[in-house]
Length: 149
Image (cartoon, rainbow, N blue to C red):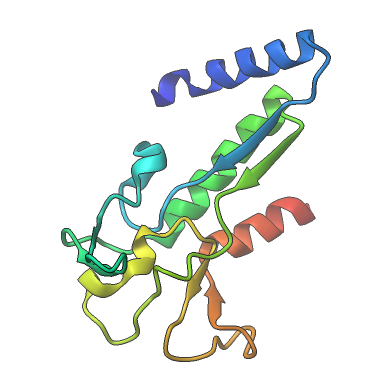
């Protein structure tokens, strides 16, 4: 699929342009554990949910990898820009239902299943923005640099 991604975007843009319409990608991204870039919209499938709709644990021994998330977002944005996409929206800023638990086991670091560019902190405020209950991930900084430059 990855080997056909650019061609698919190029065809999508051509179709939009042929109709005289702008082309928007309304949601793209990946989660922040090792290996989700190839999973598309299924990167958050590592969560076991309770009957109450809250996360119980991650279903395996995942490894946090914020750099993979950041790299993926920038690589995809580069493709969108090169192929003429008019606008694109990253999925998502924060997932408040999937917090990063400080001091917990990796199976309770629900943020690894989040598409958010910030990690939600359930038990303390962040340090970068002390009045917010989240802390930027690597993707946050890379996106800021991408759009600044």
